[in-house]
Image (cartoon, rainbow, N blue to C red):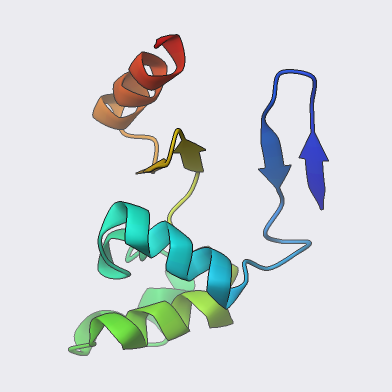
Length: 100
């Protein structure tokens, strides 16, 4: 489900509408690698033993496409840059990008 508000933001609920391969590839281009997008702390990731395997970047991308919890969230795309996660540093960078 995509929602566009009057503030110009678009929300995509990946539980309802899984991220497409094309969307994921585009975010990878902006952020650098699938590894940087992979949520290695996801319970299913550990339960399935993926944390004990040496995975290629492409394998990580395929995993993200199979299970929405493997994608680090939230993701913000602002002026062509991708911001992934909610660390204090990342939130500060998002605020700075929005105030420009």
